[in-house]
Image 1 (cartoon, rainbow, N blue to C red):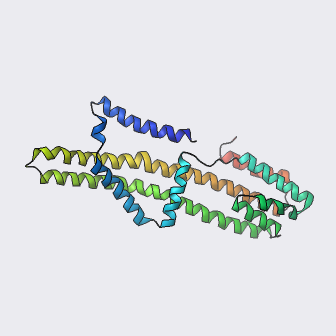
Image 2 (tube, one colour):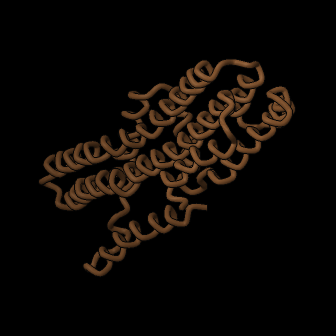
Image 3 (cartoon, helix red, strand yellow):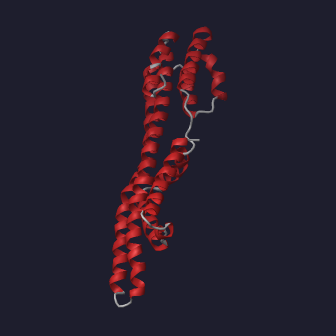
Length: 251
């Protein structure tokens, strides 16, 4: 569980509610059904129009990363790659065949299979690089969906504000309806700005950080597998891959 994500949500929402209470306002004053429908419904509709179904579904899958990110142990990955290298040194490439069956990561399976099939290092590198690029691009598109929502929400909020003011202008002769229209106008603006800056944009940026880490892990695996194909010394492979620990702040 990502404690920072949970803390961030609690602190941001709590700060707004507490500030409102200290200023003499009530929480109920921030609750407005029409404004909620306008801002979040309009933002969702615009987002669905912009992105294809596959990207939308992927963004829903990745949403869980915000509170329960995938754990990537770079030290363990390096140790595993070095063990593959030592195994190949002792028993040859075919010794990796048994590992392919038990491997759960499709990317690792493909890399090991390319090794066992005796492909040259540059061919393995090209294939794995294409695989990494395709997956990274798909995940970044899913993260950009939340970024797009962060762009639409404030604008839809302003649209809700204008609609509220139109409602006010149409009911100038009935003072009992003025307060409701003005409330919708201002609350819609709050919803739009708050949703963008406290929800959608932070989610997009956090997902991008997770995508970067996941791609670094795949890149490290690819570099290690290519090094094995080149028959590099296991110790040199370990030294080479240690650089990824620096990138991911593990040392």
